[in-house]
Image (cartoon, rainbow over all chains, first blue to last red; front, top):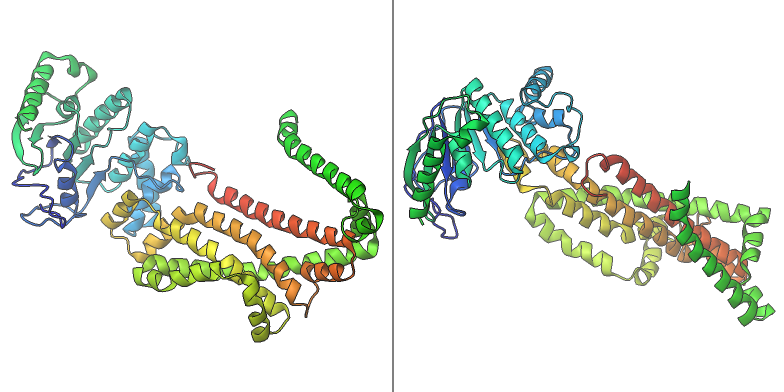
Amino acid sequence: MVFPDGTHALDDVSFDVNEGEFVTIVGPSGCGKSTILKIASGLLKHTDGSYDLADDNLGYVFQDSTLLPWRTVLKNVELFDELRKGDKSARRANAKRVIETVGLGGFENHHPKRLSGGMRMRVSLARSLTLNPKVFLFDEPFGALDEITRQNLNEEVGRLFKELDFGGLFITHSIPEAVFMSTKVLVMSSRPGRIIDSFDVPFDYPRTADLRYHPDFAKLSGDISKGLAEGH
Amino acid sequence: MKRRLGILAPPLAVFAAFICAWYFYSGVILDETRRKITLPYFHQVIDQSFLDAENRADLLGALWTSAWIAGIGLTISILLGLTFAVLMSQAKWIERSFYPYAVLIQTLPILALVPMIGLQFGFGIKARVIVVVIVSLFPIITNTLFGLKSADQGHHDLFTLHGAGRITRLFKLQFPSALPAMFTGFQISAGLAVIGEIVGGLFFGRGAVDLGNRIQLYVARLRAAELMGAIALSAALGVAVFWFFGYLRHRFTASWAEAE
């Protein structure tokens, strides 16, 4: 991937994400992690290489919750169906269902201004869930949240992943988060971004908070951290 | 109650100080003749402008005329301003073509244009409406355009991902994003519209008698008390429209906008 200004962002990045797989990419700032998601979603045209998307219904959660502030929670969650000109009563029912799924029942008529950062992220998740995505892209979604909220949401996404069986592609700076969430962790080098290492994560689902204190968890985190340091 | 008093007390104190200065100036610096024809006491202004039935009827009639002429002009400005802002937001070449002229009408001294407007459009109501439009158009265009363009890039990406077209994007994303800035533009323009109407009235007297016409008449006849009354009503009208649009902005954006 080369940008018009000559920035060589990505080079030789190749991997698959299947249903039931949760792949996380960790790498230094500016290594092109987000660029991969932008290419995968079609927001950016890639200059070289190819990608294949099995399904049009793509979940995509950004760094920011990107809720429309003038819309209530319910209307925000309905947005994608609305833009895709879905049937009105079906999209309302769908929205109510996913709002319950992320545990925000009762907040349908609140505006984002009145929600906490974690709740906004839940709304953002719910909004993507309305599409029943087969593939879910996460672009450092919890980076701006406090640690407790972040861990809660990690468990929440893990639960949804098991329940809905989508393929997940997750970007983060945080190695513990990567290990906790994924079935596989890819390590990227700094620019031009290349995948330099790959780790399978063997832990069973459902994963709970205790896992973070398991020796194997610490060992794997350490290995990934070493891999990351070598890429610099 | 106590809080309301706390909010009102400081401006009321300033007002009291202003009235004191006024009495001092009228009573100590001016002699009686000059006081009568330049600046009568505060109570004389109230007495002659608003307690005298005939003068009060004249002034309130003029206030009403000024209000509706400014209202027509402002409505035209809002329609024109929104149209231009939307067009400019949709195509860079339209923005490049028209924006310099939007700046130009803002920088033209309106007084220099007034004679020409009179010659072209007569000295009646139409000319006054045109003056109002000229002075109030620019803030609506710039504020709305700024608002339409300030929609968040992440939101734009969302709309792109889900196949939204230009019109959907305009009405479901850009327009709501622009609302706070738009109302700020309306608010500024509403104040300018009142000023424009009164300036227009100083020059164009045909059709209906407005505050500008009254001001001119009172100056010519040396009726300083009524002149002050007319000026006070002009200011009151300006404040009223400013509040009105402030209220509308609050009504439509306060429930969701981050900062008021």
